[in-house]
Length: 320
Length: 320
Image (cartoon, rainbow over all chains, first blue to last red; front, side):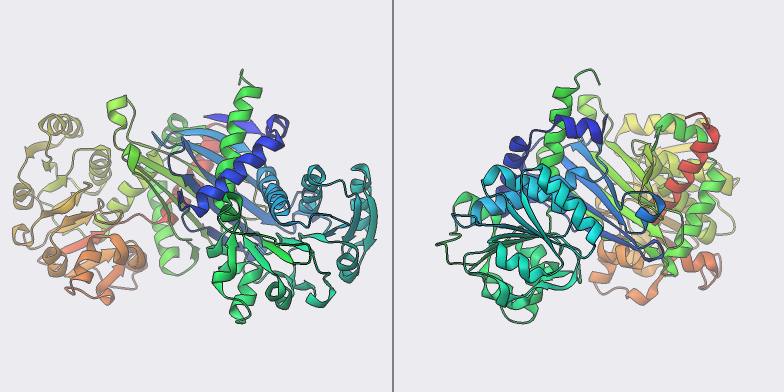
């Protein structure tokens, strides 16, 4: 079994190829060609932590993947990162473990950011007048990085609660060439941006329906587990197009789950990214529509990024 | 993260300590102190293979475990073992991966054999007049090895379909000091033995109720997934004591699941090993009773054997 460390993985991956693999994964998933067993979740209340195990195999592909990701939210006080994790790639012909990717959660972050890029490419309005980001963490950074190749817009409004984190994000975005407005008022994001990405672990709505301009696209990636919510359910209901990575997962615990439970929308309104990518369903019709992409993170993304990372590392580091 | 290979793990483990840890795990499980997310299963039909991912955390313990085990049944024709796998031990305080145990499935085999030992210790009749084994594989060997410390009985009858495998098993058992009868007629096992362990992947009953002598204890470990069955359902129904590792799993796909579905027994008859070990329920009353232990393999066993293996390897190999 090959073992690759985070720095080796980061150095080996080409983002364009990775994005293409993620898109292929979404298509296979929506075609029903992926075995995705139930997600395993642990809750470590004594340590303010959790862990999830996501596994997937695209039928016919040479490998399958088991991904372990952890979030321990008191870690920073101990000088440790909150998130950790690894991925295992196994041979679908013999069962032999082929690679251990000690990515410390990086691949999960990247595959999530690339899903955001895919959603924006599919659904953003034709002219992006301002980008808005909710949250100042690693995912907020990666989402912005993955939007850079999609648009020339360099006007950014970023919302956060912590002034120091906002300032750090400003410096990061500035280094990418953005003109940055920081704010602690989420309404300001809605006023300044028509492409918004929400990346927080919020458990109450941060963006209200009435604030959102016609034509806006919102990608919500924060609500990846029970009880999390970043968007007003009336905003979800108001959207002309509601895209999801997985109808099943988003109905259980994504943004749309809250609107479904309140009877504001029905499951049939949800369009999977895989169907949009294949052109089997219609996304945005015009630049007045509000579009939403609810991304809970599907194991097929892990399988695709891990399979590619293993291949890229083997090519970049043939001596290992 | 420490990485240990199979040979290092085999060399480090003390079976008595391992058995005690497995017993503690069963007790914690039956007390409801274990987080056991749903098992993840894959089916690789193109390669006649499967994979399961089992994870568990005993609340309060320092580590939790994710176990991947694979079975690819065409591997022997390629010169590879059918079973492979590994276990990951992670810190329940920070989420950090602590050890990768590249045991190639050995720890799963051992924790299963030790569960068989525990069941026999709890339920075997006071005088063991003969041991019977169904199957000639690795698990059939390990089960016998783990019975040796429990009894002075060295009279063995082993059933199998393949004469060459039977002969190989005879040599193995002979080396342990057994007087061995090999047979292709399972009835002979029932006639000669009052402590029987069934270890095959059979999908139809091998042992019929009418063949079994009063006083016999049977441990069935083969039916670890849907569709598998080694015992006549009337034999299950006839048993005076029906022990299980997990009421939930055994009701789904163990030996007892078939008898439950046929209405021959009810869930309330099932006694978990953890309750028997704690003395909270009564096992065998007398030497005329027939007792059964249906073992499907619970993730808490993996968590316990992996946590112990990590500790034992660290002590045995302090330089690593």
